[in-house]
Length: 430
Image (cartoon, rainbow, N blue to C red; front, side):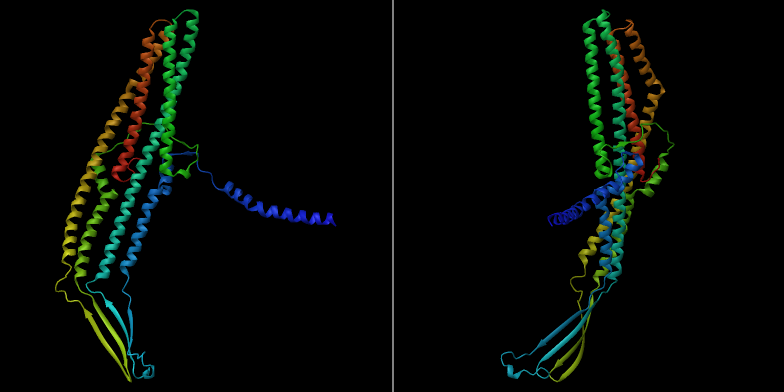
């Protein structure tokens, strides 16, 4: 009997374990089936992730939904009002109560008739507000796109600087190894060897600083694209590159005037201000309230009609009309200022882009090769005793400074290209 009971208990315990662990297994399987965040992203993918997952941008988009809800509110008609008035109940002399004959009943239905086209003008103003909100969100997307591209290029620069520092450390490490042997054989003094070793320490510090810059650059990029959208060990695809583009300042300015969301929002705000003036004049017309009522006073049944309207003697909405008219002039000034800002932004970005292109071209015209050849010649001559240690260290510093400056110029050039798209408001440079 105990054996059978143990088997039954064993079956019950096994079933309980299955019921307990089955949800956990299903959850683990669901997590394993979910797509893993990407570990390698391009610039276009980074921008797309930011546009979809950036929390600040998603919060701004909700302003559009709120504005559309205000459109619904603006188009609603007034509700009819039901009023019931019952009087003459002799509660202190109950014997005199005679509901059909001695009490008074008044039931009325009233409705507010809006005059001056208020509802239609409210809807127009609400729609203008929504349209301006959409352009404001578009402008926020424009800024996020540029910020992501800036951060992406900063990561590319940090990676390039790290590669350069590691390669310099490797090459100089070979020089240190050879000089250690030369010191042992008496070809160079211990003092010269120590100077070489200290220079290697500087290169090791450069590698560490480049590693920190890369980590910090990735952190900034990850914050923009959404922390959970990429893997912890994600990397970026791409390199610093110089690609020439044929651009004309006049064409860029014309495209910016047609595409910049902030300028379009300013133009819509001017239209909104004008429609707000029309609404203010519409609100000047007094509304009419019509009423129909049923009266029962004792045995008498009757129907009554009535209306009420405010006499516009003192308040004719003068203050709101004056304020809205001033707001129109203010909106026009803001639109003019936005137009000037767009033209100035394009001119500045174009000048910076052209300057950066010239700087990169100068490096590529021969200075990079000269710095590299100078280091190779100095290293070759130093190993054979034909040049001094100071010449070698100076050539090494010049080479590294030139390479770092070239990479910085490339990053500035690529950032300038992204800024052209930013100030124009569309992807002029792909």
